[in-house]
Length: 238
Image 1 (cartoon, rainbow, N blue to C red):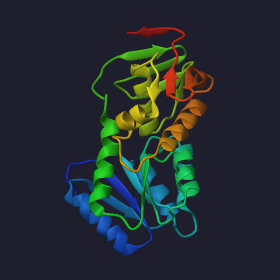
Image 2: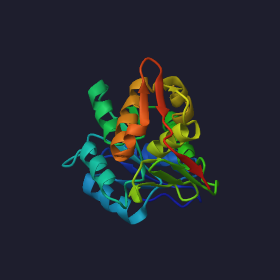
Image 3: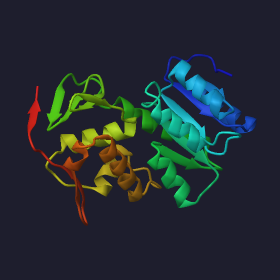
Image 4: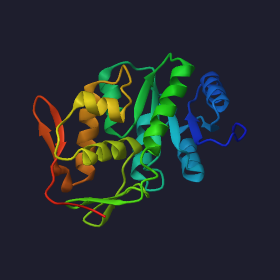
């Protein structure tokens, strides 16, 4: 099912409950997005590879293949690794939310939810994706090289696949390199200070970012009791 094109970014809604799909599709389409839907994990993966949406609204409780498995496959596939993901979950337990964030989700929303809040969260994630897209320069910090105009990151000339939130987090640390960034500052800049996003979210994304930047991940220093700082072994912009 695909809503009429509205000229905005494409969103893929993945849920096996028809009423929820209809509700989410309606509100997103009303807000100007082009919306597709899928009711299973395999269908979601096929649609994501074919349509390359800007964002996927992903329910975790899917038949056959769980949302966690779908998210993991999305992140391991080069063609879908950069797609933003907003998790929907009926589970309120912290371990489930942390697992989703560890696998690379950009945000999460628990059921039941407000459709208006979902639309606002989608918009906030997409703003993070778009930030910095018009800057035409190269930033080099040690072995890390960022092509701002292309949103491409390489470490020792090997391309690194980052999610939109991971990219925004790296750019925030890079733009403020050498200075300690408190978790609250990072939440305000990277996550738009969503009221229910906790500092644990920052820690999970820093951990994933370090892993993906290996061995350059060691440049992200933990300043105990304060936050994080990107060290500068050598810096060149051009």
